[in-house]
Length: 434
Image (cartoon, rainbow, N blue to C red; front, side, top):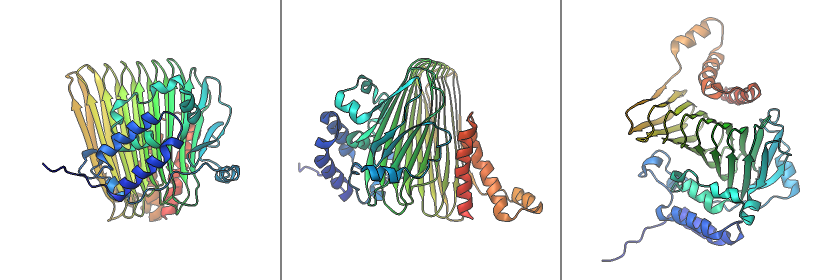
């Protein structure tokens, strides 16, 4: 029988050429990078016939491949970081990356050490053995591409209760389209605690392609609070992944606020490996124009007595498209699981679109699990009530939208400074909407 050859798209061919040219220049073990790229190349860019990418056809969306960003000069770094970060007032310690390379790092507070990823890869740092703790992510295209191309990042080792917050700031400032691949590994020892604030920014009008991964490996009784902001430019195609491997009696929370990017795909894998842990995944998405934002998450309950909460809110204006795909898996051993997932969207125009696909897969019999999804417009009665009391329609709409998004932005956030910063992002979006 004749062999059947799989046709590659121009983007897939360009990625293969880019990897062949770059792999020897990137830090760390070339074999592990080759294995990662091989996992990607076997299936290629995901498309709408791949179920988990059904609503975000990356093969169609990624027509061109940007070259890897070069290491910036000191002048470029100074210029990129001259604009104050959203979380500047909230985080006294900041690790900043410019064009995918470590640029500046403040002294870390007691209880946490930071090692540049390029240095850790070159030296074979022992904590790198914890990369890929959530193995389900390895076959994912975005994760595999990050593993193949990652240029820099940081390894954070948390050994105590860290006072204050640590900020991770990623800025893509190239004047021409560029790709970045950053990886952060956060290893939290038993009984330790940390609060992380993560921001992603890139220039408007330039088709940058950032691909970031943050991996959490959390020990027993540890506490982690994580906030992520996508403020990328209006032409960016941004891929991001969060993985969390949780021990016993852990308190873990992550939330993602999307206020930028032409196309974004945010993925979360959260695995309950130890008993009696609590994990929360939240998000708020604000879209206008032709923006497309996809949030896809998988929550694996493998141990008894764990509780998971997922809440996502979407405000969609113009011709924006929102996507939510969420799945809670409950293994046979995960008795007394309590899992609840909710996605809600408000459409602010006739042309906006929302795709919801929440799922449950339960193989245990003593559980409490629920999921739901809603999609609608602003309540006319509430609008009338506000307008009858003297508020102009734009202000009345803004008040309702702010209240709607505020639940996902602020719920479970015991940090006033961070909450104010995030609500400032919501207010800025509403003001731009007019």
